[in-house]
Image 1 (cartoon, one colour):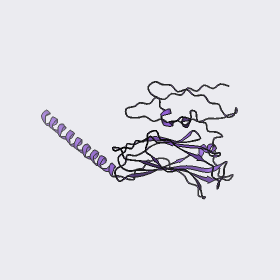
Image 2 (tube, rainbow, N blue to C red):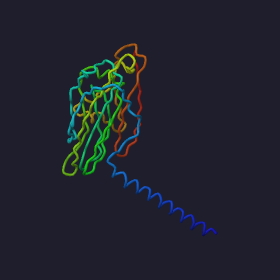
Image 3 (cartoon, rainbow, N blue to C red):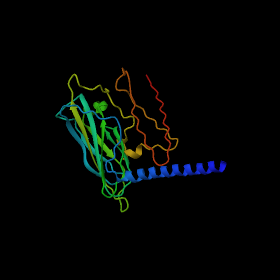
Image 4 (tube, rainbow, N blue to C red):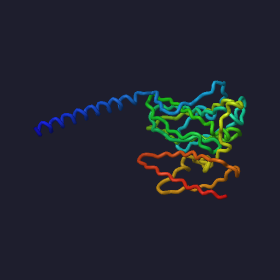
Amino acid sequence: MEVLRYLLHIFLTMQIAALLVAILAVRVQGFPNSQNPFANGPPVVYPKTDPCTVVLFQNEALSNYGQVVNATYNPPAECQGPQWSRVILKFHGSVAGVQFDRAGALWLGGVELLRTTTPEPDELGIEWEVERDVTSYSSIFRTTSNATLQIPNTVNDQYTGVLYITATLVFWGADDSSQATVADAVIALSPPPNFANPWSSMSIAGNAIRNTTFKFPRSDVLSAALDLYASGYVHYIVVICFIIQVNT
């Protein structure tokens, strides 16, 4: 009897293992064939009024690891602020050939608006688009400033994929009933674009500690929020601790 139970246990274990292998094979084989990947997230809500756009970067070709692209941002003349009902960042990319996934960021006035990772392409290429609601950053869109884009990339005989990036800000005007509630000021604690290589300037290895000092723009601040971006590579565990000291 014990022998029969043992043989039955082995048989069922093998069947379950074979089923899992089959399911895994279907998933692994099916994913590379998809040229329309998407990520599930909160939907971006568009107002029903006509928008106006400001192009930050137009089909910029990124092929060098230390390449940094800068552009001048001017507030939209067609739907002037200082308030908007909605501001959306649209980020479009394409790449073909052989290339790793590459991480990078986009800043405006030293403030990071987007941290991103590119997909790995095939020979036919792939296109993708990211949309982010950046209405809460409205205070930095009111004046002329510098836009900075960096996605470190390497192109050679082996890795042939050049990244082509377009980034656009889309604005919807506001009246008294539709203007969004936004922060009075947005402060970059340590603006990476101040460095020759913004992406590398953010690197923290081992038990390193990064200190920064900033001043609130006014003394009667009621509340403050912190936006944090963290990226890791290969084998990593990221533990982040913030200690904030307020001097009055």
